[in-house]
Length: 178
Image (cartoon, rainbow, N blue to C red):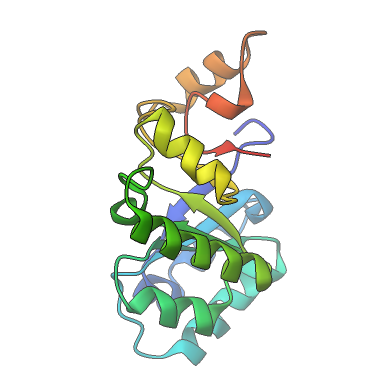
């Protein structure tokens, strides 16, 4: 995988606690891996999950909480796991440009994330106006169809290797807004 790309890997708490992922990632530079835990996944034992994550995080892996804002479980995940990245669910970012309540909630979550040292990725950005609203309230990165439809790694590398590549409208995963 070409630098500076990062691989986001969705991993259930059960998979992480089981230890089955450890040998799979043994020879991988996990400093370029983000382990994503969805807010929809139940965590029966946060202590066991933290212990399972420790070796990956010690080797540089990032921890992301996916789908934040979609339900209460994400708040428990965030408070108990102290993630590096919090991904705002598209149910919160969709129409954020025209919904003051969503904007206020997202703004609060962004402030909270920054206060605890986490960054924020807004998922599901589909319009220029949503992107502008998210920039205005301080989101760190965005992803969604407005930026690009999903691409294969080869297509992404090809698209980003051209001189006309514009990082704020990246042709793939997440675009940095700073």
